[in-house]
Length: 379
Image 1 (cartoon, helix red, strand yellow):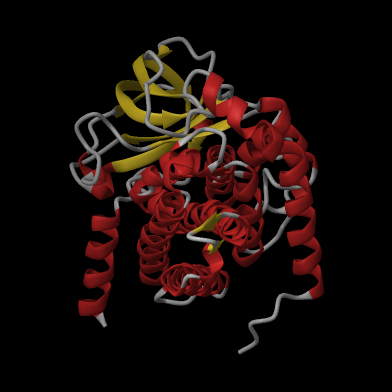
Image 2: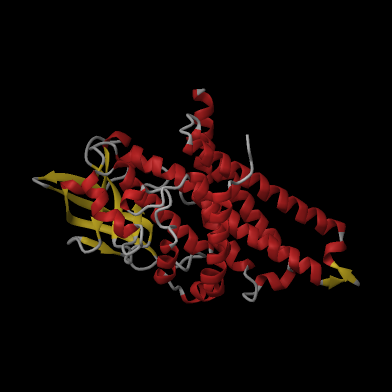
């Protein structure tokens, strides 16, 4: 058991950190305030291999591990939580095509997805099925050499901007065994998008409903076999949960670093805040909880990389623990700043707003507990 990053991982971490500090961090407040989706900045990230981190290299991917991915997303999120989180979703959708798509489908889309010439969205959640994802009602009926899709998806990141949508739709019986996965291109007739949602955070990425009205998708755009879609979606989410947890770590680490610097310079009652034992204890607990979260995320990533039979449980546990802990760290950092933390002069209120949704998406933290308990009783 070796907790030291390899020399390559240290180089990857440093590259991601330098990139995020130069390309994301200086613009993060502006992107949030003006709701700018920074496509060109994300393409610069793709040029470093961050848009296809664990996609195979024959289609332009980096061919790295889930542990490498966790390290990368933590660093990217220090620069901007919302943008890093979107890149993580793009990676998840691209991996699903790479892992389960036909060779023709892989070569059709992935060379452009790994450069972010094309941008991908993941479409599972529906207005009537959130946590109960297997109850989805969007249908895909076979008609000759096409499937005809009807229905809608809710809370889709990138909706209206993304070029391809990895969509889970019902091709068969009720429940998880009747779901299949499809790649739907943006300009497909019958595909439309709702108004942009007005959100608490994640303002640097668009979110809207995606609707399908007799939307015809070629049979060759099915990912995997009929009925495999729910399993594919859940396998994608194992890694997606780790990525979102890693993004939480990055945002919370910036919040902790900001609070530490503030405690060193801010004086009250004639001495720096860092000399008050109550605040020392608070900062110590924040640092401890972040380190525990980081260990859980990287343990889950190792489990995925090594196909550990308990990987799904470990990913759920890491997502639940890390996103809860990171949000609390960010909120505590804001509190330590007093009224200043509530101002947009500091990044803290933005980090708190952006991290809040991580406890909801990729499976709510309540569902993470359901998964954890279910896996416990299977053992």
